[in-house]
Image 1 (cartoon, rainbow, N blue to C red):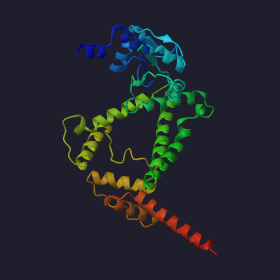
Image 2: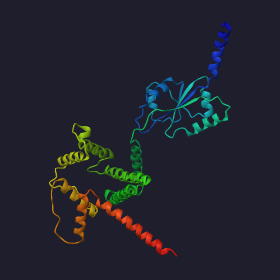
Image 3: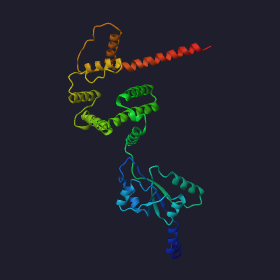
Image 4: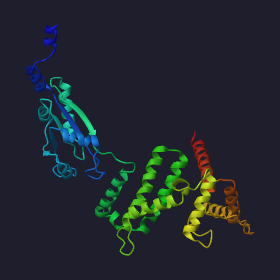
Amino acid sequence: MNANSSAATPGPEQAASAAAAAPGRIVLLTTSHRVAPGLLSWPAWQALHAADQVLCADGAHPQLPYLREAGITVDQASPTAQELVGACAGGRTVVVVATGEGEPALTDGLARLAGTGRVAMPELELLPASYDLPGARLLDLVQVMDRIRAECPWSSQQTHKGLAKYGIEEAYELVEAIEEGDRDELREELGDVLLQVVFHARIAEEDLDAPFSIDDVAGGIVTKLIHRHPHVFADATATTPEEVKEHWLRTKAVEKQRSSITEGIPLGQPGLALAAKLASRARTAGLDIPLPPVEGIGYDLLALAVRAESQGVDPEAALRAAARAYRDAIREAESQDRRP
């Protein structure tokens, strides 16, 4: 019994030998440049404080001042995979603070070493120290737009008026993507519309009299949405879409203090959409306004648009759908004419 116990329990020399042979641990610490430096997860701080060595290839890494302020010694070094494995010998833990591009050369080297089967590899852990919040990539867009505005010969000369036509084009292309049901196209067109917003906001920053930024634009719409959704952000109640619309129109009327329900309707929009919008405003306000008793194609179209709106039909969308069907018929006729 005693002999078996003695054989099963390693002595001090065996334990020391096992510790010396332990491959150790590599922790690859990744951070997001979209999160303020120093705002790291608790597991990340634990790993940093417990590490035998902390390495970073970038001496200007934005996290370094905060790590050093927390009492963590960071060595600036770019070890090879073999050197890093050696640094972990004896069961040591080495934390590598990854650069913004990650550490592809290092991780590829570690993968090649592991693939040989001849090296006792340390345990490798990928530890995200900070995560992007939803919408974080919008910060990238703002930064890219800043650089383009400063360095691109074309973009640096653009004005609000010069860009106006592109906003209209992108909006129409977005509508087409929605109606076609193309998800990839929809994602792309949403990006193009978003670009117009960011571009105009970047131009607005340079105005000498009344500058504003993308943060002002976002802040304004956030305030508007909260104020117009008291059933979400306050103690009002709305259980149907109709009640929500009533809340919206009521708060909007108080905000705008308009003298006519027609104020705020852009007259430059397509004719059918304009007619439908006017009819919608009149119907919502409870006004029974007879159509002008004038004959002509324009007034016929007005009557059709008003009728469509009253039936819950978007006349512009309906006409586009009919036009696409007509387009397909034209193409079919053309293909028949080309047949031998």
